[in-house]
Image (cartoon, rainbow, N blue to C red; front, side):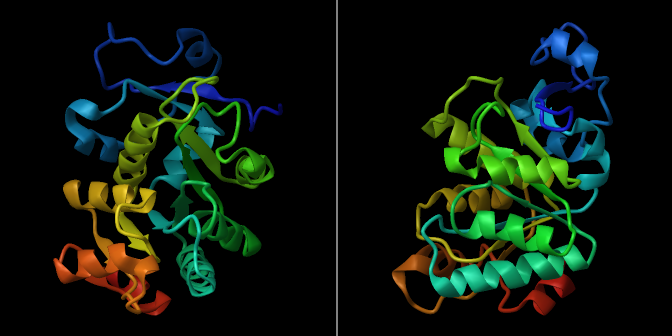
Length: 239
């Protein structure tokens, strides 16, 4: 692996000096950069450290991060919207963040890359492998083209329900806003949306067309937990 794709530990230097970091050896070989203050909003769940690819870019990348997320098995319309929203967000100078997952998230990463925008990926497993596994080229492209990848978990850790939930909260905490393109109710993307609500991050949801694929969007909008956002231009107004 190149230096930009080798996972390194990034300790939270704001926690107690006696608190363990992900790996003192990795931390000593890669001096820590400024810890994102926004993660303090996680309260007791704020991590003692993170595993990162391209840690030196994080202060810049996390200054204005906007999550674009949605269904893994996305409709063609959702793929088009993900491309449009991610492109607009990147062109406006924000960092597009997503979970590297199939569907909406991978499309958001790819759309930002097409216009030269760096992206931030939060993975629910160790950074020694991509999740899903066949997105390894996309994971490498993120760190090799100005972006970074983060994980709560040391290399070798596999994905589980617990890691998916915690990673969704981390993704939301790093953001200034979350854009929900299309989500089934109770889908993984809903975890990120619900974490955004808990953390008081603006949640923008594309209005549902009435189909089951966007049931999560419809519920959050009906409960007034998300703001309707039908276009990229509207998203930029709300950011």
